[in-house]
Length: 575
Image (cartoon, rainbow, N blue to C red; front, side, top):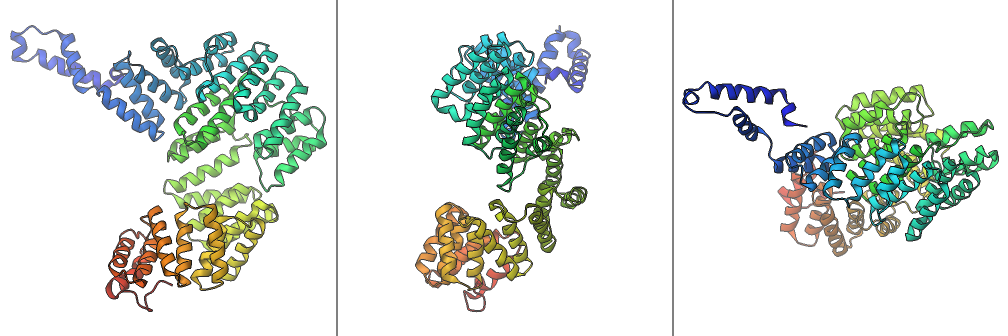
């Protein structure tokens, strides 16, 4: 944002200048009004370093609109500083202002012609405008040594497809695949072949991509589309059945199934270069998200929605990244903008409700989810989200009812259904209906025998109730093997040792747990008890004091107050 665009700044300059010229000193001195105004601007304009630091903080928080504004202020004050110019175009792109980002990226290239990310953004604008030869020229010297370089390579291939050079594009992609990216690239090669009109090659490549990752929704969707578009409806049905047999669902899979079940061709996925390239940005954005490079992931996702504004799957991914950063209001703006006719709208509405809870309005969030479920009782995502919110709100029996509905929808027999039994078990346990809870935990383990959260929860519960101690210990040890850095599971193991009288092992294990989670009142309380039992009474009191100081709810405080007063006794020992 230009400082002089602020109306208050203009008024300040004019008012201050007039006041200075009207002063007694001004009457005896020659004043240059332009110099007066310039000096006043320098007094009130944010410093370059201040704007830069504010931009850094805003971008780290994914408050991208603020980041773009701060970085622009800094860059405009020092237009020859490529570090500032680069940060400005990155923030603009992450905020979805691709036109401004491309303009600023061009300035960056004037300062450093080897900036691959700047080239990528400028080339994306050219691809949007179908200036394919311009894309090829812009990216011809980019090497695939980074995420930006790899993406630029694929974008260049898409430009070749747009220029009716499909075979040349596939050769470029095969060359890139030799660097170890073949499994990732084969899916995008299939989309390029489809867009180029080479259905035979598209099917071959899509089958290879599907064989590697059959449970990725987009890959299953595209492969089923290609099969059905070539009249192979039975095979398309098999692909969709295999996906749904895992107990997972996706609106895009459901949409394709509706066509396939009617023996109707669902149509191509990548009907043009822009849609295909947008999916490339989506795929790389997901990889960056897994790498926790959220700012760059957001930038790539925004380039995807720029190329294909109707790609609601990508919009949902943008919203999810913003949610991770706590930018729930901005995320809800993304979800709200998804059209009511989109297959992804139901998911968006559920996320809006969840974000209302994240922003402090749980009552409204529950009300909205209840309404969604009433309108569409088969919406498994809404039903499960409602159960989770009710459980968080300590409406445990109501939450259990919601999870029961979820199991009615899925059938309760798929491996992935373990989660519904697990969370329903938690709801029953909190509602003090242990027999039902125990049955659900055991059923979850039938479906997923090595699931560490279930092993830990059931094992800890048994230990707490002095039940099946040896079996419980074995379950928790198995959970620790799978998640050795999980402080809660390690606490369970330490507490199992304590209950079994293996005090030295209990202390050693609980100390590990406290190192991982130093401010958890339950764990500090457990370690205090263990210290007391082996005679380290000062250290025990210290741990109980910490437990009390970090207990926001007060449950642990009620337990440790008697211990701090009288020491550990049979009457006040944690059970």
